[in-house]
Image 1 (tube, one colour):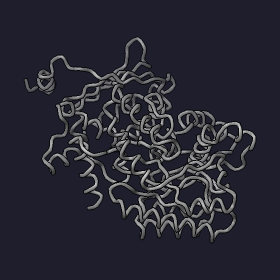
Image 2 (cartoon, one colour):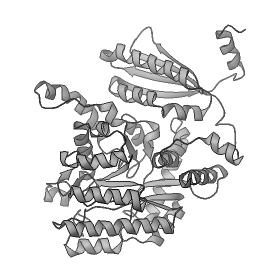
Image 3 (cartoon, one colour):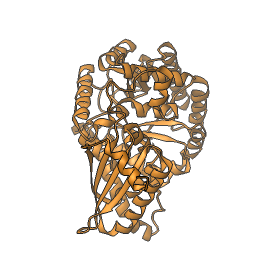
Length: 469
């Protein structure tokens, strides 16, 4: 019930233009006792740069100025483990209980993903159970590596099983790689290169063992605009046949693993970056993240305003602005889809100030595929089109076509009852399976929205096609 009421409250805020609605899935809190634990072991500069100052009031002030309605708090790097498992457990427990206190004190503003005292797996399991079942944590934060213990390590399987049973959302964050070249780290900050590389390394290690397929209830948020995954995944797909021929790698279920990954926009978000991310994910798996407090509040507010403006002006991405900024996050953390129509009925409010959301959406997808995937792509495109029209009331037509002069040039006419019907479509399992299964087949893709010159004629066309006129 509380989750439902939160969804309703944010929806009303958005629809009426009041209050704030952005959900920030990538931000950190740095309480004094955490800093004391680091300073005790001379680890305050462990990641190569000083941790910024943080307090509750300044975080709330940032949220108010940015238009952020809710923040998902996570512990920053480094992991407070210095060889003493008991000390680490105590610091982590104190942090998680502190975050639970913030959630209680500011129920409409803060949520949190609990930290775990890794690399002690048994202690991590106990803390995960306590945090999720007793403290009411909204997910789990995992480091890409905890003092050299990387995600995907077989030793972590018992922990993954526990998290899987609880349908946990996991927010990843890069930590200093082990080992690391000190001279390179001094010359180029970790955040500029090693952090994206470290994130990519951890995800690839998890994929190599099919972690996200074997523990299929997990949902994992990848930080920093997907890091290097849009480049690394096609490369791994190209390399793996040679590795398998030598018996050096097992099969990887790329589509199954990728379907469990979400991506935040912390860092250098832009329409170009989002298009790169869409080569490995779908529109409903992209989430806003600020990375507060690692840059000054005014810089982060300015970055968000620039992103909002860029999305509003981008003809292809503008319909999904609200999905990126808050809808996808609510769906992820509530565990259920959002329906604007349900909210409209419950609250008797208009969905939009004009009729854009109720107009029919007509689009032509202009796709070029690699010749070697011609037959396979056509089969999958026909299958997903037929399934969508048959099972989704809002999908009026999905009609794949091939150019006569070049059979690798595919054009798909797509007609949806409205934009909500399209948003529902791209969140379906059959569409996501098609999207992930054809990523490596597509050389280029452009989505061209069309304007009907005579919308009133559309129903007559379909009646004639059905032989009713």
